[in-house]
Amino acid sequence: MQSASLHYTAGKQAPVIATLSSTTRLRSAGLVVRRVSSTEERLASDLLVRRMYAWRGYRAEPLAPSPGHAERITIAAWQDDELAATLTLSPDNGTELLCETLYRDEIAALRAKQLRICEYSRLATDPEFSSPALLQKLFHTAYLLSRSHFDASDAVVEVNPRHSRYYQREWGFSRIGPLRICPRVEAPAILLHRNLQHTIPESFAAAKAA
Image (cartoon, rainbow, N blue to C red; front, side, top):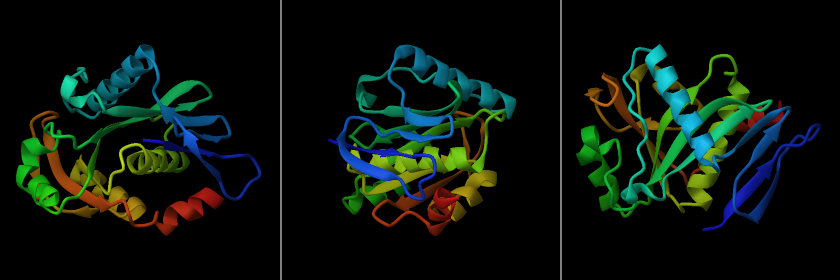
């Protein structure tokens, strides 16, 4: 698959999008969002996830390499060369998605519609760098890679209910799974879904022009 590349340039109101690039990269005033590309970056991203989960009282295990998840990718945001946020994308390639532990029937229902699913997981943001602009660029990169790299038609994400309004308001996700306790992090969870073939919400367009 070919990925789209999107760069933000100071003083421009809209990004310039170019296809035929191996990575998707967003830049803006010292902020760079792209796919992690080395073992060191993967380890740093994993450490950020475990540190932020522990800070919130969640349990988090290291993201172990798995042959069944060889296509899984992690994206990250760096602010002035400091790791600020990370998010992992996993295509539905026949290996069990993380959310299937709790929501097997809901995922089976999506598969029955012949949807090409991408799962978002392991979101973590360093509070020192957290901002609406950073999250907008991180999730927009996830959207681009889901569509261009995985050819995904739909995305799912298992989130703590207190975070669900952000996903619904900013990114157009809707709830498709009931409240349950996730054994991986020992915290409440619900399952959200988004049709990636729909356009990006107006809230992103407004933030992009700001």
